[in-house]
Structures are given as C-alpha cells and as structure tokens.
Image 1: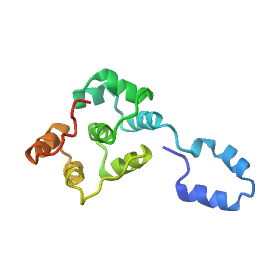
Image 2: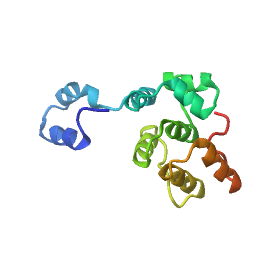
Image 3: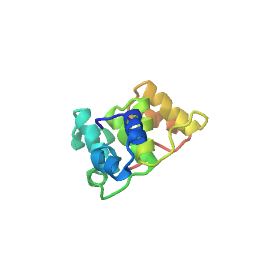
Image 4: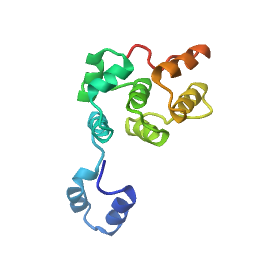
Length: 143
C-alpha cells in the first residue's frame, strides 16, 4: 500500500533534522482514511464492491457507505468485510489495527472462532454456522 516500510521511514526520520521537511517529503506515506485503505485493498485483491456485497449478502447501501467513508464499520462488520475479501490472518489483524480496533485475541472465544475460520478459509456462512452452534453472536449479523 505504501512505498516505504515502517523501518525505512524510521531511519529517515532519525537522520532528518527538520521534521517539517520529513513530513512534506513523505506525505503519501502516512495513514490514509479507512475507506481509502479498504478501496486500495479491493484493487490489490482485484475485487469490486459488488463482490463484497454479494459475499456478505448485505444491504448494499451500507457497504457502499463504508467504502465511501460515509459510515464507519464496527469491528464485527470490518471482520465480515475482511472475510469477504479473503484476507489472511496477518492482513486481517493489520486491517483491525488500521481501523482502530483490537486485533483478534485467541483467548476470547468469539475471536478464536474467527481466527480458526480465517486459517481454515471458511466462508462467512460457515463461520456463522459455527458461531450459532456455540451460541455466540454471528459475524454477519445483518450488516
């Protein structure tokens, strides 16, 4: 997503005496809004918003609002979008942090199910079936 990794930025920042110059030279390297990041992920994964809507089987206006930045998704909705995009565990954890949410934690029962679903590449529906069997809140609970 970015041209420079964090270590490269850190090294440049350590040797640049003028922080304003550093910021100006690297303005494209700083965190973009979540909706822009989601749209970049779509491009990277060769997906369209309509693909996500179809996989989630959701209210398409709500999904389009998330991707336009008009609505901020909850942690659960962001995880649902991550599953629909086919993100792996590292990508999902990064997306959660990027969105300002806690990463998946294996000592939490609900999170453990989601981690297992990601690692086993389960669909959203199959994930929800397991969650329902365990009497836990569904991942795709009417987005």
